[in-house]
Image 1 (cartoon, one colour):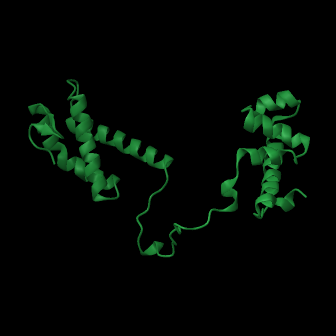
Image 2 (tube, one colour):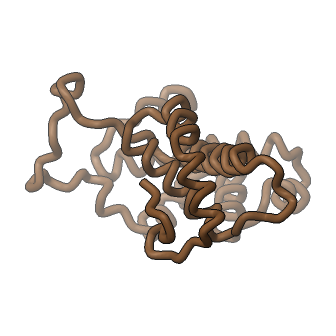
Image 3 (cartoon, one colour):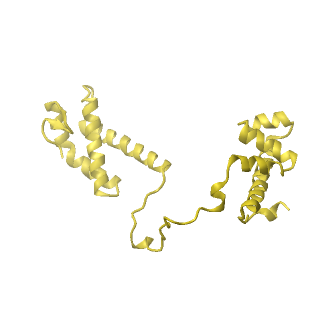
Length: 188
């Protein structure tokens, strides 16, 4: 993986290059315990080498392997955190055979043409208590606390009214666009 004198197109000092070559087998074994695939192992080791090259070998480091494994651990934790925030990606295989691809020529669903004007029109059918909360939160971007203060109600009441306003709007718009709502019975 590491060539003496260069790393990913960068010039590496002789001392650091020797340290990287010496530590590579240890780092690969550690990465193999941390990563799922061989590609991830190679990437983690390479990223560790790159970070070490960018930082340079600090004079106060007594154990270069410990220094490199600390860098690797930090990179691995960063990858785990970023992966946790994103969608999980799975390779498509036989276990996913029942997935039906989207039809490119499928008709757009009725709610696909919904506009902001449609929502505003539907607000006219809401009771005033729900309409005020919905307008304040959605269109005026007020917080629950601001709305509670404005309307002299509890913060929890704001959340309840906002939820019910959304349900009622969904029912109203569903009727207009011919889409059934599965929760309308809760409010009637």
